[in-house]
Amino acid sequence: QVQLVESGGGLVQAGGSLRLSCTASGRPFTNEGMGWFRQAPGKERECVAVISWSGDSAYYADSVKGRFTISRDNAKNTLHLQMNSLKPEDTALYYCAVDADLYTFVIDMRAYEYWGQGTQVTVSS
Image (cartoon, rainbow, N blue to C red):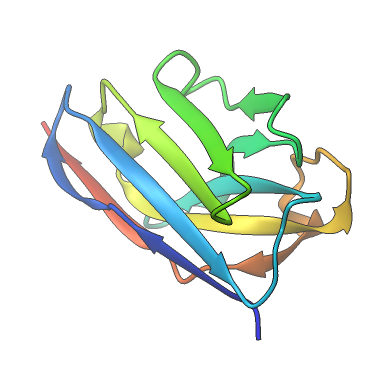
């Protein structure tokens, strides 16, 4: 059974940093793209960052570009999101997800088959 478990969320002051982690179990995801998505109260879920299966390519939403860094460790089946210079508008429930197809690099969340339960990030002003 595939399971994604996020960790690392919490409460931080504006300007601070957090590092989110996502550990996948059930089978390896070395050939699938992975991504971080977030959903704030009253808003639609949005793509934050996506990384290709090889880790060579990454996409960032304009709102986080230059502040967030996505990375993966295929040997450990883990995904990370380093978040620096956090802003109150980054407050949301953050989810990790795995693309359903192999060797792709997709931003559209509808392409993602496996999802974690989310970890809450709250940034105070």
